[in-house]
Amino acid sequence: MNRYEFISTNPNDTFEFSNRLAKHLCPGDVIALEGDLGAGKTTFTKGLAHGLEIKRNVNSPTFTIIKEYQGRLPLYHMDVYRVEDSFEDLGFDEYFEGDGVTVVEWAHLIEGQLPSELLTIYIYLGENGSRQFVLEPKGKRYEELCKEIIL
Ligand code: ADP
Ligand code: MG
Image (tube, rainbow, N blue to C red; front, side, top):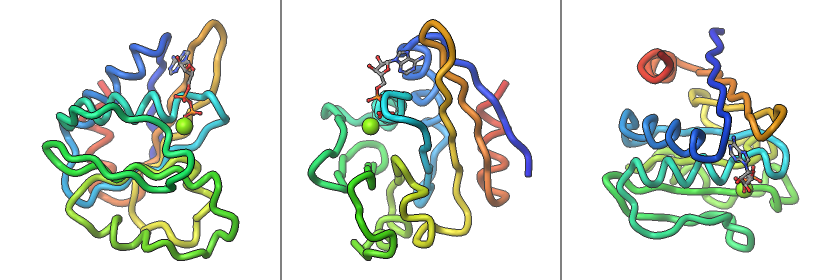
């Protein structure tokens, strides 16, 4: 499996990266985000939402596990941190197979319910506010997507 890397030096860099990525997204695309608290998963999602032409402010769906936004494509923003049983079925499939783009923060917590093809992005904290983004595409569609966005 190929891996692609992007280094962000500040929050705006992260925003611009996901903003750019969003322009290449298609209905049914699924992005899994992994990284510690404060890594930048939600910051990334905000940039993505901007790139999808979503006007509403996107914030962490703390109490609601899934939030839906309308833009060029719908965005289904999930934060599954509080899902207690990894097999609890909250109808995730309908989102993954829907007409929008799904972003899942803490995706490994529902690993068994994720689609077989998706783009996983690991975010690692570096020094002085830098972040290392490691993209791991599963499936041809996401392999192509990575090639389009990583220079
Ligand atoms: P998570 O959703 O992973 O818990 P957030 O996006 O909510 O993380 O928070 C990330 C925090 O880290 C924000 O306060 C953001 O301003 C800060 N930050 C500092 N440097 C970066 C960077 N390079 N990319 C993203 N966020 C950064
Ligand atoms: Mg978050």
